[in-house]
Image (cartoon, rainbow, N blue to C red):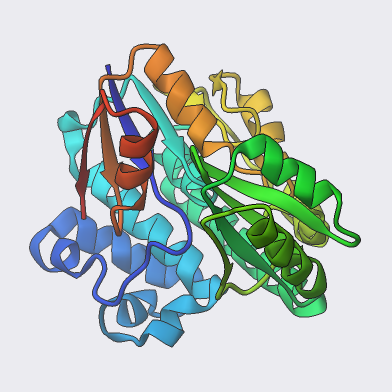
Length: 292
């Protein structure tokens, strides 16, 4: 069984999507429609901007979404997934690719999400850190011992968890993880504490937009970040998507569940190769590849 998976924020790079734009008329039309919907030429920033341009949440999220979704659309009949999943932002890409949302509506939701998250980051400065070489249970135990906001945010693969919270709490946690024997406890250069309670204002803002959107049944099950389970019911998908902003991304559990349900091949659509690496470390028997 074949899965298509979609990366999240952090996979971006300058020049992403340019080959698609230059060599595929359908892709070019979709990119130009996105420029129109967003009210600025995001393609200029994607193709010729700087790394700092692309690091802005309001640019990064639509850019990664566009690259992934347009890739899927240009595959035509070759896009025949038995299952789909997306890491954080990538869940929106997966939903559009699987027919749950039309392209323009999905892009508008991503724009709303990005602006709401950026606003929450500016209101409460916060950060994240990668913890390498420690079991999930131990990560959860140490996080719960810290005063202030400090929670697991991304369960990426066995032995790799990203934590999220206030600067002080994350700094204290990193010191404790090193004392406890973590191979690395590395603060990340991110805009804020994604997938933590500090994103609650953004969750509330996004919830309104999601409730107003029309979701259809997907062409195949989508494994969602909040519970790592397959879903096809549009109302369930909506509620899980809303919860996602303040809940952890259970990516390693998604990969294990998809493999248990018969996944033999996974194709990553979008910038970078992050998900290919995470899947390879979680399920070595799954054949992984990617398209950019």
